[in-house]
Amino acid sequence: MLLTLLTDFGSQSPYLAIIKGIALSRLPALTIVDVCNQVEPADIRTGQFFLTYCHPEFPAGTVHLAVIDPGVGTDRLPLAIRTRDGSFYIGPDNGLLTSQINNAEHLCQISNPEIIADRPAATFHGRDIFLPAALHLLAGNPLADLGPAVEPAALVQDPLPRPHHQDNRIIGKIIYIDPFGNLITNIARDLLPEGRPFRCQFRGWLTDTLTTTYGQAPPRATILTCSSFGLLEIAINRGSAAKRFAFDRHQLATSEVIITLDD
Image (cartoon, rainbow, N blue to C red; front, side, top):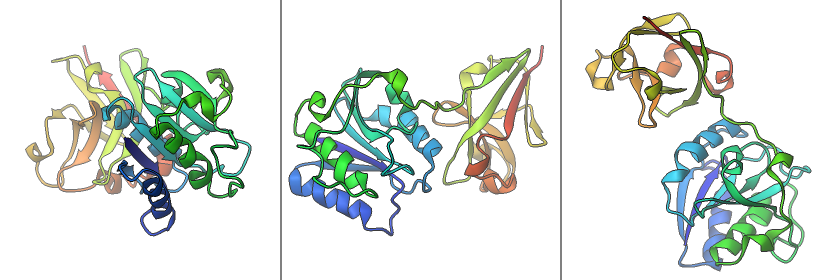
């Protein structure tokens, strides 16, 4: 039994310990993996990045609990999803689970009063609704027990932005800032034809070189490289590109990364 946790609870609150304590009390043999519990509060976009690029690495059958839920206690739906590879995702219907909705085999609303808490706290659905649903699945029970089926078209879908083409240009955006300050774009490395000259522009910075790794550049040099996700990233050897460009998560949807393919 494997449960992953992706939350914005942080390390200095009791909420994460409560979740783990209840889970292990119910299922002592459970393995819990913390994917990330330091997501900035209400940062749904970063949660989507983790769900898209990290969670597929886990084995089929894993139950993924994702609680980044600024609308907790409102009429947004609590969701349970079984994807086509047999994995399960539990979380709020606020766009966080968009990529899983698109890969769903079955979706349902979590509402069965025999499974969730008797009086769910309006501010802690992670404990009182989402966790009981996850534990129900981890015990080998059917997804359909959790509540009525829902159609994908009825749910909030807000996918990570994709790059678009305009003549000989690829126009993308930064979709994730990692802890080193590397700026991860949504432009796949494969979109750069091998050997074809190009120029990359971002906030007045320009390069025509794709560097293989950080150490190939002089210290403090700004480079374009390929991240381990197969996406282009803007980085600084022994420095932070986020600081260099005064870029934070609130600007993820605003600044374009432009790749011009030369003839």
